[in-house]
Image (cartoon, rainbow, N blue to C red; front, side, top):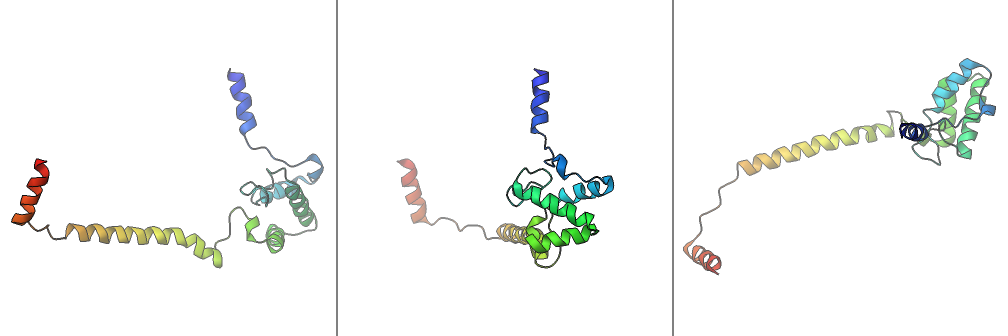
Length: 148
């Protein structure tokens, strides 16, 4: 039973989809490529990195990234090349700046606004007037309803 659980745990863990023919001979460049590809999103698999994805486009992106590194690009230049070609969606962690700054700040700002609205609402209710006492007609009608 324990062996079965161990095997299932191994199967559930993410595996790198990098094929042996993609691996660079230079270990330093390969390490850089792996680090960069771990932060790039597969356009097909959504929230899976190109390093983990078996999609054809991910293979093409891994090869393209390695070509750029072999050509002498820095990490930033290689990433920028891919962003220019595929857009910022290709980045698993979007950059903080420009139009993305609005997205990064939207959630905290909404939380602050919601907290302010809740505070004002609760404070207004606590200062509210007590309900007026029932008139004689209302009290008689209530007694009628309760007696039924």
